[in-house]
Each structure stands twice: as C-alpha cells, then as structure tokens.
Length: 109
Image 1 (tube, rainbow, N blue to C red):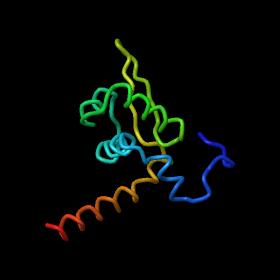
Image 2 (image 1 turned 90 degrees about the vertical axis):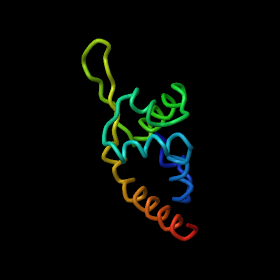
Image 3 (image 1 turned 120 degrees about the horizontal axis):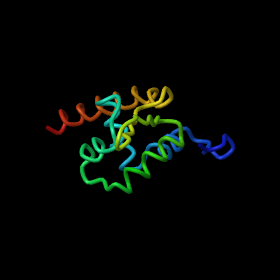
C-alpha cells in the first residue's frame, strides 16, 4: 500500500492508479458479481487473462487493501479471494459504470 505522501493529489488519478489496469477491472468485476472466488474460478471467468497476470493483479489489489485472501485447508490447499471492506466501497462506482454502460447502449442502439 502506498504511503499518503506517495498518493497523487488528484482523486481521479488515484482511483485510476489503483483499479485502472485492464485486468484489475475485470477481476474486481468478478467480485462484484460473485462475492468470493477461487483462483481457478477467476482464471476461467476473466477471459484471456494468464495465470501470471491474474497473480500479479490479485497481489496488487491485496497490497492496496482492496482484496482479501483467505486460505482454505485441504490437499491441495485452496485460496479464496474477495473484496475487503475498503474494496466494497467500490461497489457504487461499479453500479455507476453499469448504469452508464446501459445508457450508452440505449443511446447508440
């Protein structure tokens, strides 16, 4: 997680920096649609993402405090990911993006 002194002064730039990559947005979308997912489920759900890109995205989102990682016992051990309480504050942003996308679709439709 970045220190407060390292954050960009513009809140929009900060938001884009945290979630603005292609893969991070698709991974976060999966948590909006399904509250918790396993690595393999995410790999299948996010079309075109590689294991490496998914791992990097999840690690970055976790480091930024937006995603939590929960290890499940068993053989092999499974890991589940979901939105953290801070990550859940992004839900209105995704609702607004969905509403805007539907409006756009109707306007050009």
